[in-house]
Each structure stands twice: as structure tokens, then as C-alpha cells.
Length: 189
Image (cartoon, rainbow, N blue to C red; front, side, top):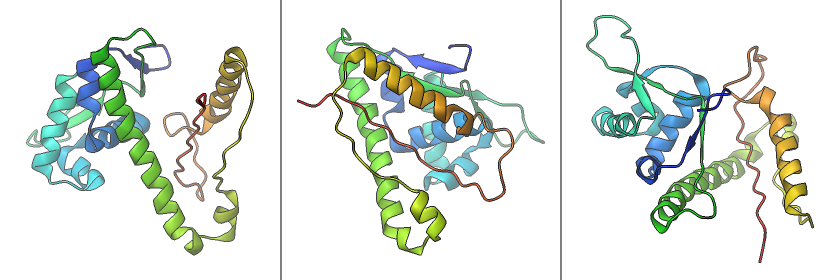
């Protein structure tokens, strides 16, 4: 884990443990907010039963991504916390077929969830205030760039977003909302 709290996942078995929508949602919540949660609390967030959510929590714990948190009271409920404030997959271009398949599985779930968030926004955007409607952006820019320039560009974008991340924002204005910001920068054929 780096000093910023970002866990670089290189192990295919850990990637496979993440490759489920409920598990990514749980990790997103626990790592981004830094809050501890029970299976019942996580179940409300992911839309599953507490027992099904407990199964996913145990799988995340077995993979080393979450751990037991201190009890909140009588100890009857198990409380969980993330072991990191964020994570990324790092197999590199030389990763073997097992690692590439595991990375692809996680990326597929992650992309599907991101696409679904955008679809939900589109279905309700007409109900939003003009301020939020105008603030939202969905665009694609075709650019011509070198690998070094792309690295510099994405580093600058990440730097611009850093102060607004859920895990970093100290004082949140009363009218602030959680927003998904998806940036996809990949070479095209």
C-alpha cells in the first residue's frame, strides 16, 4: 500500500474476490468513506440480504481487503472496515493469462456499474434542478496524443479531482452531492 492509502492489487485471486458487483460496491463504500459497517448496513447499500452480504464480506476479508473493526457495543454484530482508502489493479502488460482474465472480470463489473450510474442519471435528469442538470457532463473527446502526454494529462486530471474525493473531502458544503466522475482514456484501433 502506498503512503496515500492506495492498494495496488497484483494477485489474481484478490482480483477474482473483487469480481462481483456487491463486493465492489462494499469496497467502494468502506474505502471511500472510511466508515465501519455491519453486514446489515452493507446489505441495505447493495440490495441483498444480510446473510448474502455476510458471505461477500467474508470473501473480501479472506482476500485481505477488509478486516474486523472494533465492536460498537455488545459484540453481537460483526463490524467491518476497509484496510485501504482505495485500490487499483496492477498486472501490467506482461501479466499472465490468469491475471489478465481476473483483471478483465473486475474491470467488466466496474465498467457495468459505472455505465448503470450514468443510465440512472439520464433516466432522472429531467427531474433535476437546472443547476445540477447544467453541471453534469457526458462527453467524448477524440484527441491525438503520445503515451507520455497521455500520462501527464491523466496525472493532471487526477490531481484536479483529488480534493473532491469522498475519502479526502474534509468540509463538505451542505448542498454537495456524491457524484461519479468517470474518465476513460484508452487508445482506439
